[in-house]
Length: 212
Image (cartoon, rainbow, N blue to C red; front, top):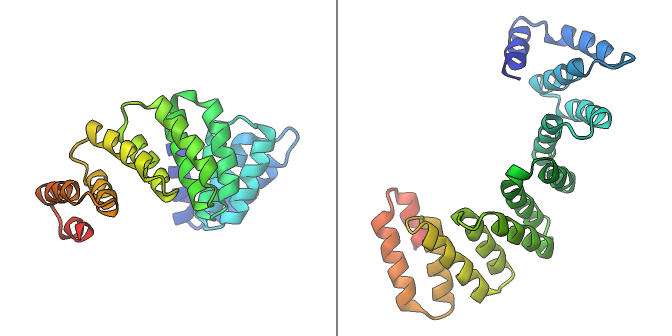
């Protein structure tokens, strides 16, 4: 993939990329289709800033190789860039099946996108699945807490944030979340302790600004 990128960069700088795309297009349209030429064609369109054309080629590639992880990953990234989030979620679900070793990270990404789509219940399911696969990952619990907080299930959110803090007691984002909910629930002493800890850990004015 890196070599492919270097070649496309050379063609672009020599003002030959547009011409070479014609060769890739003919090869990809052949019988049988040259799948490598299809990859070059898609990435060449991206190099030229032609996102929709690249999406079309990746979709054609996916029809020919439905389980190609590289194509699925590239197309999912383009869908996110275009804010076509339902399509991105569908591809991520497939990637989770094809790559079980990365399922936890993929489930987190699915949950994030579902939140943006206001599909909170489904997002919570995937966030909980991520927790089940990453019992010692503080980010997983942090995101689960944010989901519970959005659903106004503050007790469950505090529990999730508390677990995130146990796994990473120096993470400012978690401490701020705990302080925010404790303030909301009237636990001002607990909130003060967390804000004081944030002040001890904060290294930039931006971090301090978030605390107040």
